[in-house]
Image (tube, rainbow, N blue to C red):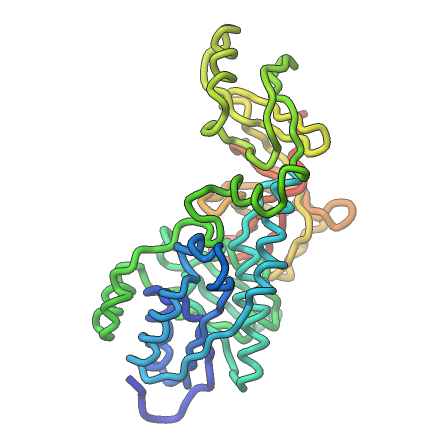
Length: 380
């Protein structure tokens, strides 16, 4: 599928073996780039854990990426990121749950593996750009000289939320060929390009390294029972209604997975309605329960922000804030608070604001910046 004429530069495409990265590579080739495919190996295929990697990053996915590159007639490489992935993503994931925080490992993987790690290897190959199959856009503001991420055309597939951590230097060298396409168009293009095998592959949904056993069992095998913080389930009135094995098993807003005897005791107390986890104390192991209506909060503090825009946040600034990847976003104000933390105040209370999750701030379709939810503030 090579095109004639002057090349626009060399671009390394992160190839996952899925339809999105495959079509991204084909489009860039048609547009006149010198395209190189590169897959990232994030686990040791010889270890027992290999069967967990069944949603992406598997050996079969790497083989699919290789076939796509053969079809397109472009070079293909596999880089080993096993140790980096273990230390920067998996260890982080486990540590956060043990501290009663709910992590988003996909954000860390994008920042530390798909861009940090991949970018270094791409530059070693003399590449000018790195590209991925993310549904997002990159915008350059000529007046400020800064780069920002924009939401994709396809709202259902938009992945701008995961990309708030990219640096200006990374954005300068990043291409997102699918930003103006819808998923249905991408699958159709894959068929037109002769990439039939990947055109029908389902989207990856689960955390790639956890698998069917669930995240709690995964953590237990990683650290052993000595690391667990056990404790007590507590009702809104302060009554204790049972014990749990460890805070790593729970997240704010969760109902599924609570022991059945807990709900039975609650029913006997005359409390009507299902109970959900409202807060988790990693020091005492106390897991507080509440009705759904009591999970809503207006304000929280976030930390470790990466600012893409040069916008002034020394005073309250109106934004749209997303507190989960599937959160549609809601109107809020944000300002820089003591110690570089960011105070975010929703106009309307939002359900289950969760420490450890990422919060991303938007102005229209533009990502202003993002960070990590640190502390949910009680209502005044």
